[in-house]
Length: 336
Image (cartoon, rainbow, N blue to C red; front, side, top):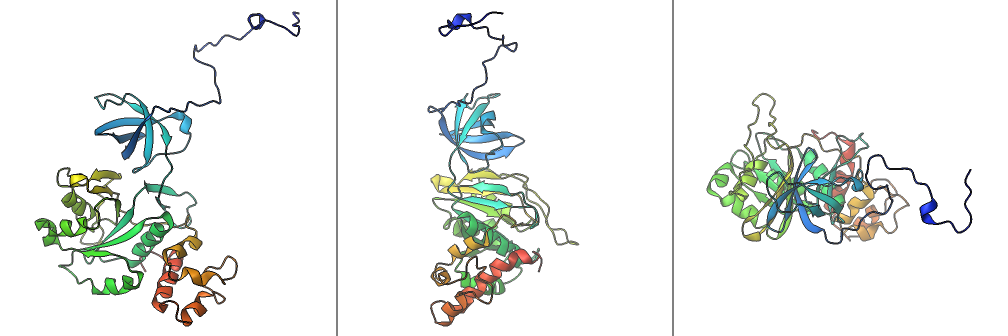
């Protein structure tokens, strides 16, 4: 048996040959300081279409990222073939910190949250005034998700030629949410798109809504150069629309006016991941009144300090009602 002294030569040490012929594993990961910056436009079965400068590039996620997934809107760092040519594939090696995140779960009992969109500035909640009927509880849930994720909400009401918007506007008037009312005729003339466009300039806006409300039709009107998908119809028996959008896609507005992100139609919007304590941040007129609240106050209980704060005239009672209606939305079904 061979014994080694204190001053052995490196060449004297036996090493087991690497049968695969590749480099040994290491915990040191490359920094990729020369990686190019890009934005994820869409994700399809593990392949991500990214925009790098003025080129669209197909990429895959590097193994070193583990289970961390990139979503539409993510700012990423890419290496490899960045030419954008046919049959080329780049590699995403880093996902940058997100400024905002829109999340949802399948239902309120599902512990697994799904990130829908990253880095959006605002959330356009699209709802039809008729055919199909508005679903206020779904709107409430989208509002809670927007406030929790750091997005500014925008309410877009379609099909005003079938029903007036007054009832819905009365329900959300106290929340001071910017809104746009459109009709089917205005979509054909382009007037609707022009008025919606005024709220989108210079921003990244995610569009969300249940099937059949005209969300993709509106996106097509905003981005006429790239008609992203066919539009669907509403079932006359069930009153539900058919999914025409199967994956989220980011599209640039004309003249560098911002981005719109069309998302698949939703029939439910779970909020299992939402921390109710963060929703109060969307009510700056009420937030100072929570200073004297009991620890871990839900802001919807007998000892909540907001009742006295509002009674003293510091805020409008309608605003407190709106806050509590949103906080309670997890306990109600979306069709109520």
